[in-house]
Length: 382
Ligand code: G3I
Image 1: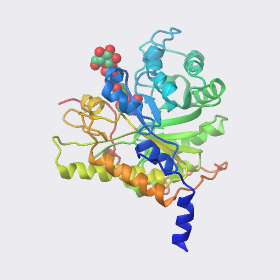
Image 2: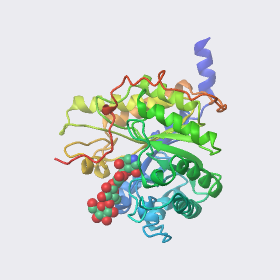
Image 3: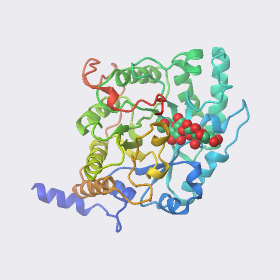
């Protein structure tokens, strides 16, 4: 009976003739498998050939191009050259564009300082979002409206926006984004909110509940997913977190996956472990009905941000520096293929209004070592 059911399900699915990441991800029931792309790599032809292959990547995120320092470096002076250079790629190929990011404490030009009053900051945020999201209106599948608003200990990050407006800056940002580009999915995006359970995840749930209760539309939570080989979260831990977020929003996504080695050069065993770690993330997404897709934070070690930030660490991506696929690529594609053949994914249930804040793994317990996931606080380079 079971076998028969499986045959019936698989016979209604269409499989890609030549399997690559995005085509198999779609066959397995996801919306996309994507990658970040940064401006310096746009003139690398071999790299761009892979980027433009819509069977490999169905979604592109500008790694830096749309950030505040690039789009409004001086107050009211908007420029879209770096953002457009990346956004033009999916325009030509039909890939989805995930837009990143409107309001973030980092890569902020110095004029966005803590000296502004609440009203001034509200006007600054309104203008930034209306202009930038307005410029890209209709192009973005999703916007990371607010990025990294919380600290690892669960407190609000003391950004210039928070100092001026408190949590209202988040509500205001989502409301303004919804008015400006109603067709885009509006995401909250952060790191260290993947492994259930920690103070940051529970604080994020409370923050989202507050913002939604204040009338803002938050469609999705983006879990960045920068982690370390051998210390990455398990599928179980990842699914527990997503179960909690699923109660508040309609979509979840892994938005910036990379899994770095902390010791270089790597051995074959290290690379196998990395392949297993990637599987946990992809498996968690496949087994969570609201998880729509996975984006890697660049696909090749050639352009990964890790070595620039963490000296002596890296090789975090699916392709090596010479654009050869690694064991992690093979394991990810095999899992997507098996998931497609098994036809396991279910249609997500719509989000019902919740009266209480869902807590991840019980009453705010903080039983897992959050240090395993990378904190992006700049670290002293050796
Ligand atoms: O643009 C300047 C260039 O003019 C200068 O010559 C050069 C010298 O170092 O620096 C360039 O700026 C760099 C910028 O990337 C553009 O390449 C910055 O130094 C560098 O710090 C910056 O790093 C980016 C980082 O965000 C900043 O926090 C990474 O490329 C980018 O991949 C990374 O992406 C973030 C996500 O947006 C949010 N989540 C975490 C993720 C990784 O940190």
